[in-house]
Structure formats: C-alpha cells, structure tokens
Amino acid sequence: NAGVTQTPKFRILKIGQSMTLQCAQDMNHNYMYWYRQDPGMGLKLIYYSVGAGITDKGEVPNGYNVSRSTTEDFPLRLELAAPSQTSVYFCASRKTGEANYGYTFGSGTRLTVV
Amino acid sequence: QQQVKQSPQSLIVQKGGISIINCAYENTAFDYFPWYQQFPGKGPALLIAIRPDVSEKKEGRFTISFNKSAKQFSLHIMDSQPGDSATYFCAASRTGNQFYFGTGTSLTVIP
Image 1 (cartoon, chains in turn blue, orange):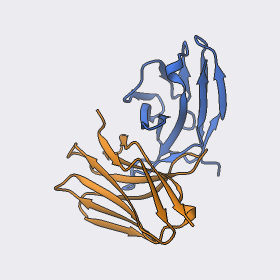
Image 2 (image 1 turned 90 degrees about the vertical axis):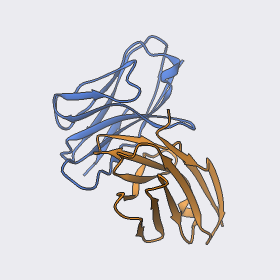
Image 3 (image 1 turned 45 degrees about the vertical axis):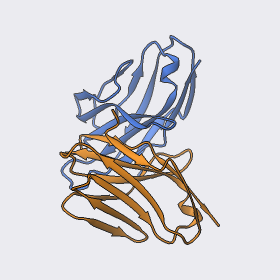
Image 4 (image 1 turned 30 degrees about the vertical axis):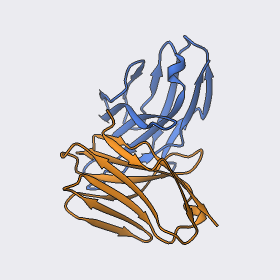
C-alpha cells in the first residue's frame, strides 16, 4: 500500500516553462488536495477535488490548473512558471464519510523556478 | 488573512519537559481541529485532532486542549523526547473540504 505518491521529488524550471506535478493515491479516497508550503507561511490550498470530474479552487489557485479524470490521479499543471511558484508542493487525500477528516499527505515536490 | 494563527514560531525544550504550542482561530463555523507533525523532507502526518464538543483529547503523550469561547486550542507534548523534534502545524476546517493551516512551530527537544 503506497498511500499518496508524488513525482517528481525535485525539479528546476526556467521562467515561462510549464510542467505537471503528478499525484496518485491507491487508497480509494474521493477527496484530493494540492497545497503549497512556503517558509513561515504554513500550507496554502491551491485546488481540491471531491471526486472524479469535480475540482474547485482553494486559497491560491492563480497560475495553476488541475484535472481529475480518475479517482486515483490528481495532476497539478503549472503554466508559464514564475519565480513566485518556487515552493514545496504537497498532494493529500482523505476518505469521505468518515468523522475523521485527517489527510494522508505525499512526500512533496520541491520546485525551483529560475 | 490568516484564518488560523499559531505561536510560537520556534520552541526549544529540554528532554522530559512539556512542549506547548498554541493556535487561535476566527471562524466559529470550524468544526474540526487537527494537529500535524512534519519531519524534514517529509509530508505532514496527522498527529491528533479534536472537535469543538469536547474540551480535551489525549493520545499517549499528546494532548489537545480546546477553549471554544476563546476560540483557541493548544497542543501539549508531555515528557518531550528528541524524536519529537519536528515542525508542528495546527489546522481548522468546516466540513473537511478546506483546511486552513497555521504557520508552523519548529520544535527542538534538547537531550
């Protein structure tokens, strides 16, 4: 049971380039999330999904896009990368219908835009 | 606007001591308050959580104290150990769709 798997672990992008951060979970969780973590700022929600085909914006969605074609996968797309998108990105998931809302997080993708 | 305010930013505690981290929130509609523990290079992991219908929850050496009227909650780590050295995040959510995280507390437990 792998949990939440994120790839790549590290990436350096040049300004204006695009990339997709991959996230996959094998726990049959309906809810999936993308957060970014910046030093001293905690985690900020970028996008989330409550199930396949359904996505919604979080606190900081600008510059990002997501899709959710399957229950397992929730990729995050960066278009026209900017230095402000240098961050550590975490994907998380949780099961619906439980009293415990606790997330399972992936191990993160460290992205640097230069 | 920071929905959840966390303090202190960093904390140094002697082995065996009590570590206390505090959080305050504004939105009275929040109904779930978890604490996450994060080690360097890893994703956060759920440590303990509480709902506003109880004032305290204890799991092993970790206790959440919740004060609904003051809109505050805190994490107490009893008998702190060097292995507890990590960054701790509080969070709050309504219905579990969106979580708002505090800015984190870096805990160092000195042997």
